[in-house]
Image (cartoon, rainbow, N blue to C red; front, side, top):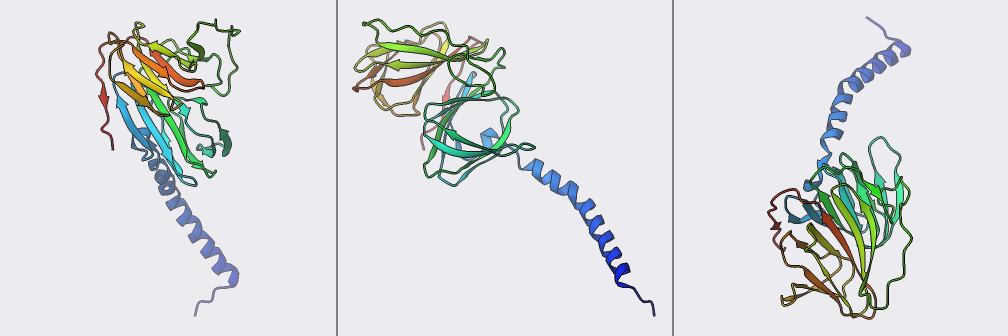
Length: 266
């Protein structure tokens, strides 16, 4: 009869566990890699506009839910439509707890991989604009769109009494400029027809958009947007409230003919 001491049995068990770990570890790593999905497949990101220049996603996540781990294939500008407390998780980096403010604008660079858990009790909402042409020379102007860089904001001048709106540049690349526009109470502003295609995103619900001077009026809610292509008539945005109404303008350098597809309303 062959006898095994306690130490011998322990050694055999340890070797077996080590072999099992070495065999299974590559499978675990491959499984983790496979869980990174493209932004377009992330179920909380709803594609609302696609053309040659941009993809526009409207994002809504319930409290205590999470945006799945995904990769940004293009530079994207995210505009917060709510105040939210989140935890951002990126592989190989410590978890980052963040308090995001309504109206905050952030850059999510090409290649960035992350998930986002909603920690607060409010619904997380944003509009994410993917810039489909390669962006070069990006830098902050009057907002920390790139969180790790400082501001380059010229001194603001008071608007003259006849002014209908104020513009504050937020961020700029060689291809795209992002500007915050504040429409004064009971005033209107005409946007588009600048030699560039222009995407307008509403932050407030006091605005009414009209295509040209005589087009049909359309109320705009927070997160609604208008695409104004080169050669298209300018749109008029009227503020019907007693407070300022805010818009974000994306002006995009011409890159060739554009085809626009608006996703069907669900």
